[in-house]
Image 1 (cartoon, rainbow, N blue to C red):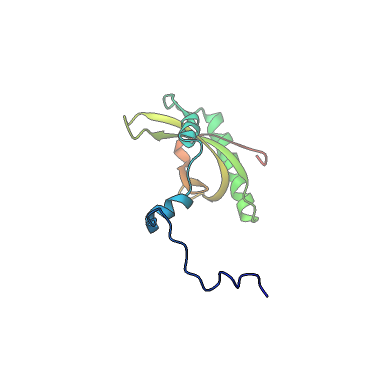
Image 2: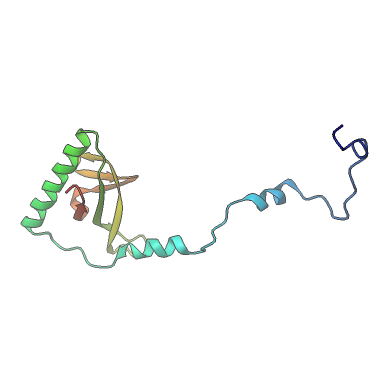
Length: 135
């Protein structure tokens, strides 16, 4: 005995509401952003408005040493977490802006002179600074 013998052969009750479409049902379960605009605010915080400056020879040597250290770590199978500040052209007004990105180094290419942090390729010529625990 399952306890459902009295209702097992009955038809489904008729609802007073119209059946919901599949698209409307899908909306119920679709993800939503509880903090609307939060990701855009975080992205804006990582933008530093400042003109591109010529790096001193001392700064260039420091960046070069950091770059070599990162390359050595990658060759040993390690992927250090670094924070870079780099220049990029603003899409709206074509001015140079400084961006800050923190992430795991995926690749560093000495010949092509770029570093890839997660999915962002950054040219060595655009770098302003690199910092991290392993540097």
